[in-house]
Image 1 (cartoon, helix red, strand yellow):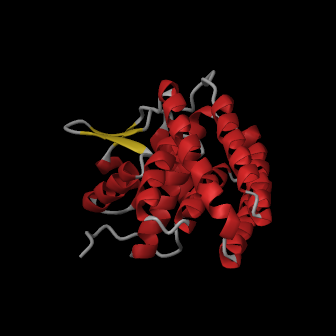
Image 2 (cartoon, rainbow, N blue to C red; image 1 turned 30 degrees about the vertical axis):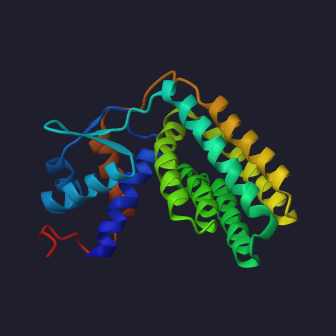
Length: 238
């Protein structure tokens, strides 16, 4: 049952991070329950999880909607990230353990593989995860919490406003940051991080058009492709 729930979450988050669902589109519990073959309670839990990760907006007494990130907010968010993340890499560079370096190297290889496969949603997810790995390497819970808040706020900005063709740039920029960390070069890592975050901000552009408004049909088609072989249960979780 848990595996099925994770598969549903991957389908929903993948559609959101790929920019396949128009911002502001309502996501109704009853419709999602029907598409995924689960109870309304389970559908509600999935929506709450998406809301916690800021991929959707949960509006009291109105329901759930695809997040509508504001470009006006991007400047403040990326300024905060530059301040925090340049400090993180400056702190890490002189003594980042070999196992943490290996973890980052493996992660960048996964980013490259997703890019080559043309998997937009996975590329966006992995790009965010790269920054979280750096935060977690500090071992500081407060830094990790702040990064979770900031990264979650920018994931949908990237999904909605950054052209898919620029994904290669982000991957290459991560490699530049990693190279400086590998050398123990704090100043170089900070410069690479500052440049990377500034470039992401400049790549965010208002969209000329929005995806099809038939979000339910999009989700139904995605689920038909991604659904586990075992039939989905319509019973509530016990």
